[in-house]
Image (tube, rainbow, N blue to C red; front, top):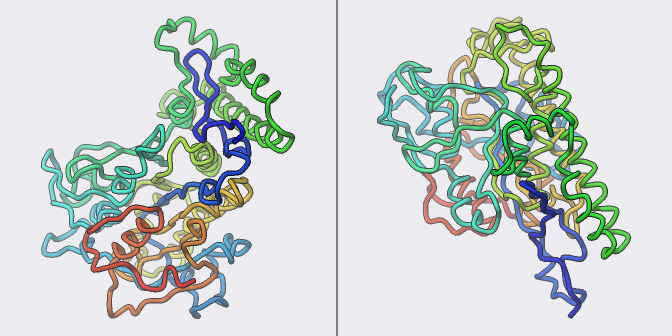
Length: 448
């Protein structure tokens, strides 16, 4: 059997670790087909504060469903999508706890658990499905999971009718009392993936290196050249394209950091966070793709913004806070602004889907070997509905999910969203007895 690179190979320099994408050289020449199978990745992308459902839900089920206004950016990927209608989160409802639907929406979204109403240290929710997956398949990667988001938020205090901010600002929970806050700063994510800092490097030396705009790739260039000399033509091209994408991401982060000095002093903004929302989301999505491509992690959660948050979107002519206009009382002008935000968020998700579809991985694309779930813990935001939740899946988990259709469950049955989560764990090779309030695996997901 020929020598080959290990699946989790790295380029290493001083304080820098650069993972490699899947290369042909990582498989023995006569490896069995099973050995060539790419790992399956799982990502949940959370859309906050509900959806204008009349612009989301198609009228027809099956393969010939129409792409509604909000879903339109995904139309080019019809064959890669499974749209699911009719799932519910009963534990997101009040259940005698009064107000606080936003806190319950995000807290229950991946846990399927009714959170304890508290503002303080007595947090109680449940282990989220991503962390159930991370506890099993996370052992195979450098990072068990990665939590990302586009809006920072505090983790203490009251954010929704007596519910702690920890509930509204997180969807990932390692335990019933430990949420995992999303990282919003692309520079911090980059350093976590590539280890920009040498523990023995002085602050002055590090500042000097960053001022010179030195790339992490400069520190592994010699090793990279040596590796290229041992690779075939196809692998050299793959490696060159991958390293070019890493350098391009790093350049965008450096550009944002340089421009940050021009921001008014009274505007809080962490270094490396673009002011433009779409640029911010896409930069983080690019980092997400690199993390999955290099098998740095196989489990990701991403919050498009905080649940019930006050983020405005002036770039799409919505200067008001999202949460404020979400209580639109069916006023056409406010419904329209909510729909614009929904479309804007979905456009960014479509960018991620396209990026993953165009990223080679094993015998297909990164999207082919992944499951991306986009959805919200609320349907109609004005009425705070926790049933008929908007859900779309991209990617078929290496052929385990039948995509290209709209799957509808009876609204009256209120099928638990946790049933979907239990099924998705199965798709990534994790056998779990229970997820939240699941009553069993979701039917018809794997009808092949």
